[in-house]
Length: 250
Ligand SMILES: C[S@@+](CC[C@H](N)C(=O)[O-])C[C@H]1O[C@@H](n2cnc3c(N)ncnc32)[C@H](O)[C@@H]1O
Image (cartoon, rainbow, N blue to C red; front, side):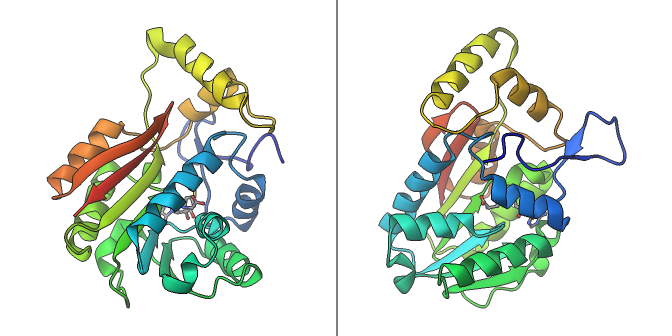
């Protein structure tokens, strides 16, 4: 596994220390897919296994994946719950043709024939047309990529499309306060690192790198408040360092 993660792209418009993920670039997309996420997210497998269990327990039959990327999440669900996709169809939406191509390849290789892929951008989410009505929605490591007003439009859009009581699962990277807490986060990171064999980044490098990313980071509390404004009830069953799963029920 590559230690550095995918190659990073400098934002063309700003200071060269600022980096931005270039999802439309085939090389970047392939590097991201190949690198896996463990070097920068040592708990990713644990997070995906909990997400898979939550989705399986929900009895979903029409899953909508907002920001499906290269379909790694579906692969994780299928490995943990073989046969789940015999009962559940998936619509996966993503803005990046490069990521959708990787998803297509993964679905073919892993015989995940139940997945319909659609190109769509959350910046204009109202123009996305769904063929199937979802009874569960997931959005994994995507919403930090879009401005806060876009997150809120996504929440409103999902709320309009989910039947009452059905779940919307968000797994993402959130903000973490620094200052006096930095040593506590370092100790937490080192504890997370110790649980995986991968060559996880040192905390200081991770912290430096992620502070320089041109993302739209918000707190778990902000997400929950925006979801509740959109009409959802929320629960946060998993939280460790800067990652959390939020379940929002319409
Ligand atoms: C970190 S990847 C996560 C992919 C997948 N959910 C996973 O966890 O393996 C982020 C994905 O969000 C997609 N994305 C970013 N901004 C988007 C937008 N505005 N509309 C739709 N997709 C977007 C990217 O193309 C990329 O595939």
